[in-house]
Image (cartoon, helix red, strand yellow):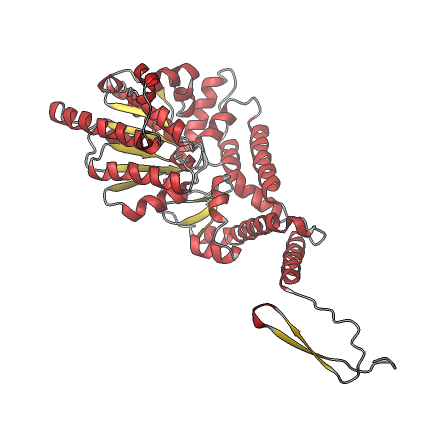
Amino acid sequence: MELAFQPGDPVLVLAELDGQKSESILERKNRQWVRRKEQDIVDAIVNGNEKGHYHLLIGEKGTGKSSMLLEAMSKVDGEGVAMFDAHADLEIFRIRLGKALNYEFHEDYIGSLFSIKGPRDTTALLDIERAFNKLDKIALRRRNRVGRPLILIINGTHLLRDDGDGRNLLELIQQRAEHLPYALPQSSDTDITNISWVYERLKQLATRLRILAIGDLPRSVALSALASYRTCHFTSQPSPTSELLSQIYGCVGGRLTYLSRVAKAPDMLQECENICQREKTWFLNQCWILGEEMDDDVMDQQKYAASAMLLAKALVDVEQPQKEQTTAPLDDTESDDSRLPELPLHIARQIMTRADFIQSYDHINVFTIDSKAMVRADSVPMQNAFRQICLEPGFEEHLQKTLNRIAAIESLGRTREIVAKDLVIKGKRYTIKGEKGTRWVVEAEETDGSG
């Protein structure tokens, strides 16, 4: 297992081959286009200077979390660091953990072909526990010899399912990190995240947990990086003007993955429109409402869609008031005309009148929940999509008709109709017995000459 923490991690080799490192953090030929303020913190974590804690990196898809970790790993050549991707299936998680730690499980031993495994040797969690037991010994030996901890990076912990197996695995990892802090669980949203449940689960038992939120680039840094990256790819073209850069930032914000895509496009504004249109199409495909003509068979899905539309409309409604409250920034880095409107999580649930949908929205990259329990659009293009949809003529009426139709269907589901036929004796009282002792009294009356 000690060989897994020797210099030259396979993750770095693969990142160099597919260009992930240079493209995601906008670095080429030893010239770094973007230097994030969080990079120093990540460097201290990966090189072992930050001791005694385990860390959760939180951020939306494409903000540069994995890229910063790869950059920090490259500075130490992967020495003392192991990294692997999480998976919802515990068996696959177990295999990936064993590969990252250079640890062979029982079935990898050829002698297991001639032996019968007992009932306690058959679960993936037990194998993961055994691997961590071995890792504990290696980590303590290294600390005594080198003085630095081992770093284990688990990429994409939000992919674990919020069920019994997923919660048990997360608890197992957290217990190891609390007692022997060598683990760095890294959660990417977005890559869609269901970040919120991972953080909420870890927070219950956390004493040494540290949260590092990775967001979009601030305006000044994003515009500078975009101009430099554009000049690198199109040397024959003049540098983009400040007006053009501001227009691009208003469309896609400071998300690294969008800036990289726009900078390499021949027509940057057209690429911005394509990105915004893709986000709008995704939102409409997932959460569009069908109006009062909808069939009652789709009511559950329409509850989900109507709640999303209510929350999107609320974010659009609070957008302008929140911008007016932030017209006096403290410095240039905070003057962000694309700052996304946000609502507290409890207020968002109150608006939707549902508490269980918000995590699903976070999982499909429509809304995001940060470490401060604030809800906002997943990205600037998604907020632009909210604005376009909610400001369309007739949207509020269409939404209200959908809500009325849902209420009518629910009312029909709660209503029971009883028909009493052939009550021909005038003045006779009939007693109808229902379940659980329920009784109704019906009296026959004379109407239009009939009893």
